[in-house]
Amino acid sequence: MATGRNHRPATSRSRGIPEATVARLPLYLRALTALSERSVPTVSSEELASAAGVNSAKLRKDFSYLGSYGTRGVGYDVEYLVYQISRELGLTQDWPVVIVGIGNLGAALANYGGFASRGFRVAALIDADPGLSGKPVAGIPVQHTDELEKIISDNGVSIGVIATPAGAAQQVCDRLVAAGITSILNFAPTVLSVPEGVDVRKVDLSIELQILAFHEQRKAGEEPGAPPETDTAPPAAPPAVSVAKRPPESGTDGDLPAVMPA
Ligand SMILES: NC(=O)c1ccc[n+]([C@@H]2O[C@H](COP(=O)([O-])OP(=O)(O)OC[C@H]3O[C@@H](n4cnc5c(N)ncnc54)[C@H](O)[C@@H]3O)[C@@H](O)[C@H]2O)c1
Image: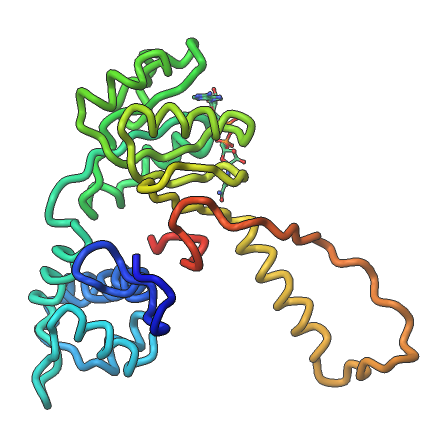
């Protein structure tokens, strides 16, 4: 990671690409994959920026880090960009992933077909409930947590997904890290502490909903005909949702989006 000296942006460990650019690469890839599926050969930076929901100047800057500049009047070669971005994100290789906690969410994740098409193979499903052991979920038999370390070592897994209740998440995280996992996707609503060198990404749909609730509340206050807010107005009703301020994860997910692009 780059330091704050000289006001340089935070960069990924490989080839000095800023973390903010890395966070946008999956958005470009998703848009490019859709174009590729429609056999579109080239795309302009404006079209791609709009499909990815990014500003086109930012997109051109991002692609310059990949050494991709497009051709004036023609645009970018879709297939080549798909390859370049996939290579940069490490998606040209297969990543075995374990999911720990095979309840409602873990089973839904196991059943999600989108992982495999993006280079992530669900290598194992792990749960502490002995009643689940051996039961197939998405065609994969659930294994007991007693086997966690062996499963990780046998499958060469480096990415773990935590879908356990919050109270179990730190202990699961510690075991995953001790077993050699260096990247964790955490769905449990808790802040995990991890040693240096372990990356944690958290997904919290309720936080996203709270942000939408904030905007909804704001829009409601701006409705045409709504009385302007004055100092003499009665106090507003308490918000429907309370927003807890949480400290940043002690991993490296910093200011990246709370939800990984699907
Ligand atoms: N991030 C999100 O947007 C989001 C959305 C839904 C749920 N969640 C969270 O995901 C988690 C799972 O939710 P759910 O509805 O699937 O719960 P669930 O109760 O259906 O499943 C939890 C599973 O974890 C297992 N488990 C418990 N302790 C364990 C341990 N130490 N090791 C391994 N497995 C263990 C249980 O046996 C159970 O099968 C919860 O923390 C929930 O708050 C997050």
